[in-house]
Image 1 (cartoon, rainbow, N blue to C red):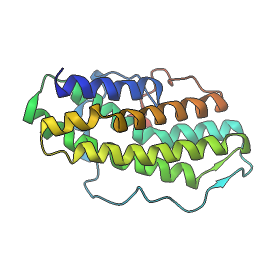
Image 2: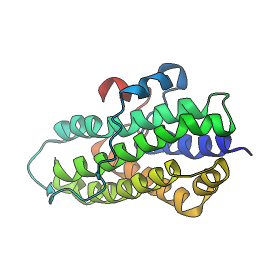
Image 3: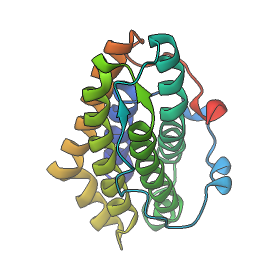
Length: 195
């Protein structure tokens, strides 16, 4: 299996059951990535202490959660669109490396935003678990972006560490969505329009 196919399977699995969207590549073109910030800010450092348990309604928490997860889901949508393309080898690396970086930044920001927001008491522990998993996903995505070759990137995304990290985001997000009473995959939500 080539790198494009194996990465696609991992990232699509994350989107279908993780934070995300099952939006197809036709609505999230790769060209939109030109607006992605290029700085390598350290957004993986934990944000200040969460105000978990503060008074907030479930309705407000649902809106907040959807807004907070949108940028990471949009980044994954762009990555999936690129992985679905017919580009392979070093040409594919030129396309997916910046997208992995963008996903890494988006997951780091996701973790910080989850921690900084107020949440109902009955979901605050699950939010912290999702924030921790998102921090690890940020590092995993950046690791894939830093690969020096197709083979190295392939090894990274096929590794147990990468797969387990993405599965942790997936299962944590599923629990949060269940607690908030959300659909398991947000249906056809266009997260790029929200982000």
